[in-house]
Image 1 (spheres, one colour):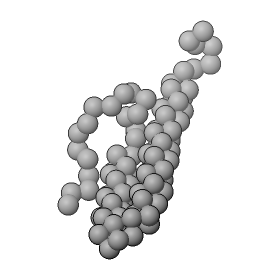
Image 2: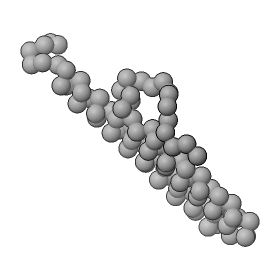
Image 3: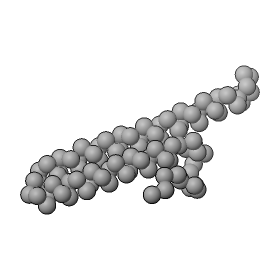
Length: 88
């Protein structure tokens, strides 16, 4: 399986986003989906549902953090480009 994302269009604010990191998180989520399917097949529906619910929350948190980190880097880069006294 290829790990590197080669091309994607994103907003300027998110051009520094860690797409490979997001893909790794999605891979982990898919493994948990497989585990939940196995749990469900074994008759443990409650454990499968709990696993999926917890993993979805975790995935959302991790992806949100990657977006936030990219936005912070963009803000820092923009502040570095603006010289004191300019832009006002």
